[in-house]
Image 1 (tube, rainbow, N blue to C red):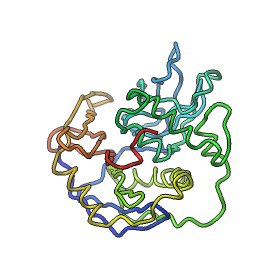
Image 2 (cartoon, helix red, strand yellow):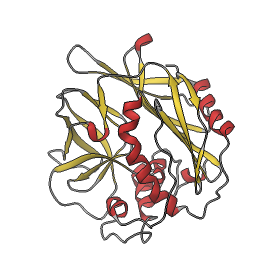
Image 3 (cartoon, rainbow, N blue to C red):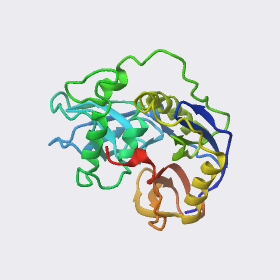
Image 4 (spheres, rainbow, N blue to C red):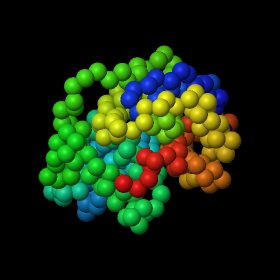
Amino acid sequence: MKLPMLHVGFGTQCGPATFFPVWADAPGIRDLVTGSEASLSAVELPTPTVNRLSVTNHGATAALLTEGELLEGGQQHRLVARDVLVGAGETLEVDTLCVEQGRWSGSREHRHGGRRAPFHIQAGLHAGTGSNGGSRQGEVWQRVQRYEGLRTRSSTASLLEHLDAPAPTGRLDLPNLIDGQRGVIVGFGGHVLSMELFGSHELLRSHYRPMMESMVLDLQLFGGASSTPVTAQGARDLVVAIGTNGLKPVGRTEHGSGGTSRSTWCLEGRHPMLSVTGIGIGDGATSQIAHLSAWNTRHSMLASA
C-alpha cells in the first residue's frame, strides 16, 4: 500500500507544541462516518473483560472507530486500542484499554461521543518496553497517573475526570482546521512527535475539535518543555520516512452487504524511528487509507512514564 502524495503547510506554535496541516493528493473516502457523527454504542461482554468491548453500529453508513477514542461508562472507562471499521448494522468485538484503574463496577453500557485521549496517553500505545514489562495497559495506567493533581485528583484514577476538570484560564492559540485539510503533524519540545492522517477532510473534521481539546491537558502537563519550534523540514522528513518504507497490509475482514472489505496495515519494521498503525478500505488499486497514525519512537514523550 502506498502513501498518497502529501503536502505539509506552515507550522503554528502553541507553547511547546508545533502543528502542521497536511493535505493529501488523493480522492476522499465517501460513505464513512466517524467521531460524534457515528451512531455507535458499546457494551461489556457477557463476561466483562478489561481489553474487549462489543460495539454496534446503529447507523446506515459504515463507521470508523479510531485508536485513542474514549468509550465512557460501563465497568470502567475504556480507550480504543486500535482502528476498526464497523459496517452498517454490524456488531464487532473491539480491543480496548482501561483508563480508570480504580473502578470495576457500574452498568454494561458505554457512551460514545467521539472524545479523544490526550497525545501523552496515545503515545503510550506506541511506547517501547518500560518498567511495566512492556504492557500497554500498564503504560497507559502510568501515564494517566501523571495528570493526578494537575487539575484535580481522581479517587478511581479516571482519565475522564482529569479531562472534565476546569482548565486553567488564558488564551491558547491552537490552530483552526483549514479547507481540504486531511491530517495534522504535531511537534513537541522542538522535535516531531506524530502525524495523524484521515481518508477525507470530513473524517478529520469529526475528530479535530476533540483532538485539540485533549491536547490542552498535555500543554498543561508539559508546560515547562522547550518551546523551540519544529521546522517544516522536520515535518516533511517524517512524511518521507513513512512513504519510503511502505505500508504493509496485515489481516483482512469481509463484512457488510456487497462484500465490502476492510484491511488493516502497519509500517514494516525496517525503520527504527517509527511506529505506524492504520486502517484501509478496499483492495489493490482501489484501496484507500481511512486513518493512519505515525509516531516518532525516539521522541521523549514515548519514553515509559
